[in-house]
Image (cartoon, rainbow, N blue to C red; front, side, top):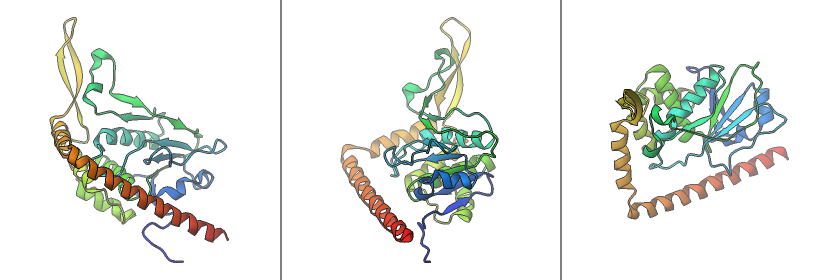
Length: 264
């Protein structure tokens, strides 16, 4: 049998983070098979329409946060929440699935009683007696899921982006965050793996209260991103996204043809 870089059903373990695995879309489409391999959770980073759906009869939790794979998508607004979720699951904690919001209007302090997080949908259930095992995937297991694995290695081991990327590729050589995601992970390294900081301010009724705000380095990056996403740039981005979507659809069709051929 020939092998290629998007080989179907390729799941790679990340030895530096026991219980963490990465793959393309195909393995996530078979929850019963995943359970038989010991998986308890699946983190899907593709759009909800194409994301795999859980089987109510199979005790595997499916989490879906849609992140598009192009340079100007704000990965930083999600990455801390995604890392917290994965690490919480692997630690055996009861984790409320959240996605961190980095919109300035959503970042408030204790005075308003908000954490800057928003709920996302979780489907399925998990048997707490099983050792937690997480599969992170996107369409190809290259850029989006690769970026999350690199971010987890950076934060867990205190590595630079380049060091973490090299470590991740020891497990899955095709991991390659797109250039925009790579730049953002370098920013994440600069800000100490969190785009937030706490500051004290005067409360309305006197005394000091803590306020959660965005770090300057992140806001600078976001301002620069805004310049890049001018109207003239936006049309080019849309064209690129259409091309990527068409390519992904074509690859998906080829995979299904390959699967049908295997079954025959």
